Image 1 (cartoon, helix red, strand yellow):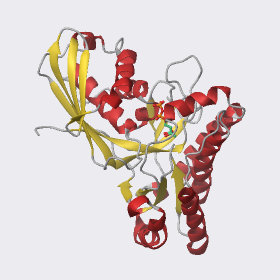
Image 2: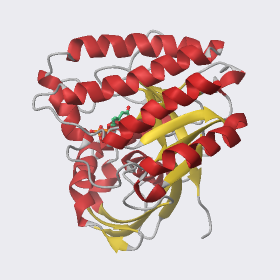
Image 3: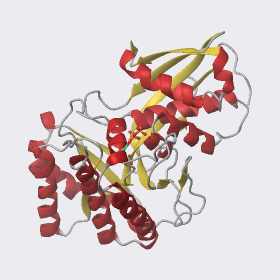
Image 4: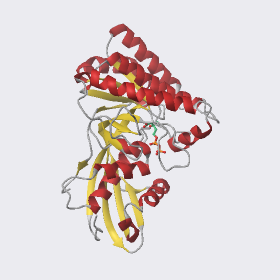
Amino acid sequence: MVNPSVGATSQWSCPSNIALVKYWGKKIGEQQIPANPSISWSLSDLKTTTRVTIKDSGNFGFEFVLDGKAKPSFEPKLHEFFQRIMSYCPWLESVSLRIESSNNFPHGTGIASSAAGLGALACCLVDLETPMAESLDWQKVSFLARLGSGSACRSMFSKPAVWGESTAVEGSSDLYAVEMQGSIHSSFSNWEDCVLIVDAGEKVVSSTQGHSLLSNHPYAAARFEVASANLSTLVSILREGNVAEFIKIVESEALQLHAMMQTSIPYYLLMRPNTLAIIEAVWKFRAETGLPLCFTLDAGANVHLLYKCEKKVDVMNFVESHLLTYCESGRYLCSSIGGAPIRITNE
Ligand code: DP6
């Protein structure tokens, strides 16, 4: 590790990710440790690009701009992140940073950008402290990203990423994500995610607040057990190629996530009527056509449609003819599954 000098700069893009088995709940009294293991696919076409420049030496400080504009609303989360990582990157104590970020997806789409954002930032920091390294220390990148936003630690890998200890995944850890080792069945290569924008507004309850409500949740213990079992089953499914079983777990996980929100104390709803309308339309379409597509949800009203690329024409015809009516301003965004952070040079 070196102390980067004033003027040193690093720029990375990082994909966001969509969880197949959800992280929802943290271990009480610990720092960003998940209550159950989760697994995700990264979304190569929904990404954040961030450049970090060492502006000055002296005391720690940072300025943050998103798409060229100062973003004071992001500063508290970033402050907390830097406080948490300071002991792992002690050189930060005596520098001030300029952080310039941009997302390649529009603002106000309700797409969580914290995974891609914190992921890209962690890449830049590890790059700055190890400028001569041939490749980044991905374990450290994932470890740091986790301290910014739990789901961000899974954005580093093009194969499925597992975060949280599980006997089903060798080397898995609560502290960072690992890439699923070994071969993945060809049934799961070349999938896509079409994110249907149901509600582009601010969420009424943030993910961080939502996690905290699990600490006195009547069903939490059962949920954590089911999630761990689902993770083990899903890992086998990804190896063996059973798409029908994949769909059952992925859809059940999405509904369990929202069921936990709806049964939190206090309870709340992030689904909208159009979220449900889309889910029902997907079930009807699947029953009629037998096409392998399914939905998942993150902590919001938008619906992620997952499908094999080879069925894209059929799925997009269905989206255009039956689902756009449920999307805010008819908006949706598609991304390939996979992808990892990329260093951006000479720009
Ligand atoms: C519903 O990673 O946003 O997307 O760790 O508090 O930043 P913090 O939470 P965050 O939670 C994401 C939860 C989820 C499910 C998932 O990605 O596994």
